Length: 162
Image 1: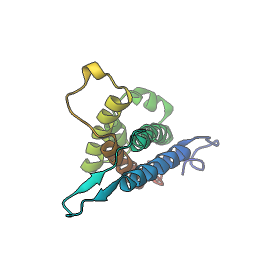
Image 2: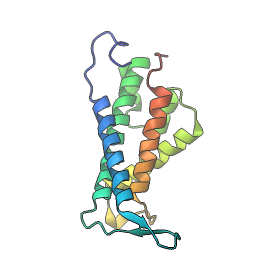
Image 3: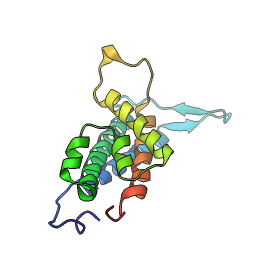
Image 4: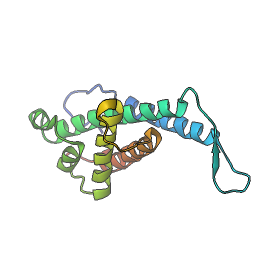
């Protein structure tokens, strides 16, 4: 997809970023599952205290590497399909705008991208004195981020140039 469609070879870490996000997601899910057991009466879960915040750490890796993957992928596809100049014009635009340029019109993907963009900014660039007042779970946001990665990968990767 990315190497054969351009005139010269492109060396990129986009596949590695995706793999790191996937590995961290699997690790996070495993840690969540191993850190809880059902209550005897079946009414819910007993959660084990995690003093090292291992699932949180893996969630943050997912969030960061999905962003690295998405930034790299969008750059490659926009340059391939439109031009380097067009990418420079859009460089600081939202993920949603870039995805729409590439033909993504699925509202669920665009809404997930907006949620991801906002959550990533708040979690990665924490400013404790200026929080939004909304509590976020890094693990829930990592779930959204990883589902977004899968949806975008399905919608865009392997498409022929426009």
